[in-house]
Image (cartoon, rainbow, N blue to C red; front, side, top):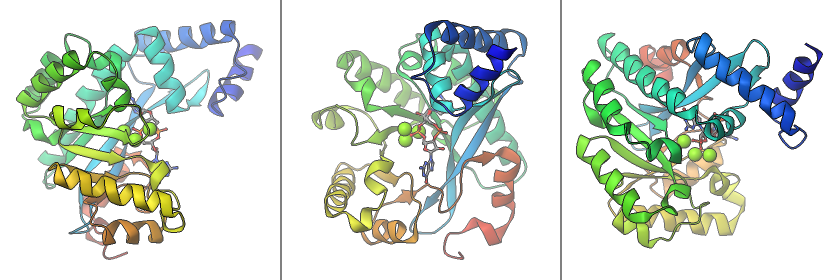
Length: 288
Ligand code: C2E
Ligand code: MG
Ligand code: MG
Ligand code: MG
């Protein structure tokens, strides 16, 4: 128990460097048990609104996984994801996320809200798993969802893998009709050449470039170029991590298509997100 208390402290403040191998084993077994025995009751999803910069309205959300462990408390998502990847548990967890998001999207549609495009993050291990597209088809069909209302966020780290395999899998996913976004764009190691080859719909500019963009000429130059390039390639461009009015003004001036960030809203539980959808006063960025 004492050990768990120490782990809880270390883990919820998301410090991995001090966590020894034996402690990591304990944490991994706690995660495995959470999945096997708690049937995902310890997991939930937060939704962060995405706003169209032309209309000022919410058109979608990014789904972000959360884990509230009785032993560890709320575990930082980045820690959770790296644990889940190294144990292979990302496969069942990822399927649970995809299914839950499709069910939630249907529930909102059934409640009469205008259709939302909800983005789900996929790690490389999920992307290369042979069942992925079959599962996606199942979840979409079960929930009677048009495929383009599901967006998959992939990072550039994936692209440095076998590029022909990546292109083939992306083509398979695109042929289902789902939307594909490249997440954290600009921080990975991929070549720009791949942008031309990959069947993607959207670029998400990493929040590193957005942070204080109005006082950093280099960030401003890079972001302006990324927006322009995205548009020339017929891609939608969204900025993540928008925290200030100044950052928002910059993005508007430079014709970025969409934004998400703490300025509008943090990621929030589904019930809270629904308040945005039902309340006109909160729906629009213009009325802020
Ligand atoms: P990401 O996909 O780049 O998600 C954006 C992260 O930035 C989220 O962190 C979000 O809470 C945070 N964020 C949003 N707006 C702002 C802002 O204005 N300022 C700042 N400073 N941060 C902001 P979070 O939720 O901790 O997620 C971390 C990463 O974990 C995600 O990065 C994503 O790569 C991964 N992840 C989250 N959920 C899933 C999932 O269901 N499956 C997989 N495979 N990965 C996931
Ligand atoms: Mg993401
Ligand atoms: Mg991101
Ligand atoms: Mg990220």
